[in-house]
Amino acid sequence: MPLVDIQVIEGVFTDDEKKSMIEKVTETVVEVVGEALRGVIWVRVIDVSGGKWAIAGKHLVDIEVIEGVFTKAEKKTMIEKVTETMVEIEGEALSGVTWVRVIDVPGGQWGIGGQALGAADVKALQENAA
Image (cartoon, rainbow, N blue to C red):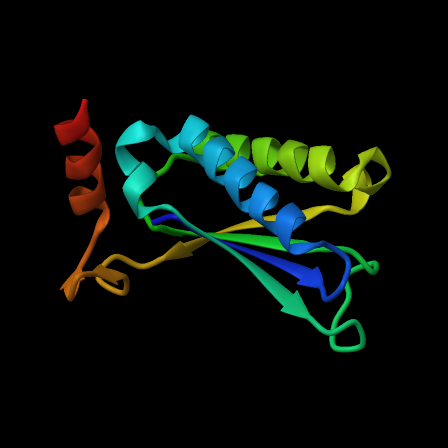
């Protein structure tokens, strides 16, 4: 947690570009959420065939987080930094049409290793690593 889904139109990026995208977005999220959560950050690039969806013909990034873990300011920073990272990958022409959403998942509706997690659990992970 967080889970980052980057939905792209199939065929736009090579496998190497997708790998780079995953690495760069992971590092960007670590900058915001802290090194302690690196091991539970998931980044997926999802290819969608071109005729199946479009937001101004561009890409959509969803970042799912457990509700109550991050402040509004931290979420705003996530949006800004992930957008900057995607523009770095995609090119400056896409800066105005790069969509990034932070979606809160209620505590107890997210689990790791069969254990449902809430905000207190994630904050304890952060504190224990500090």
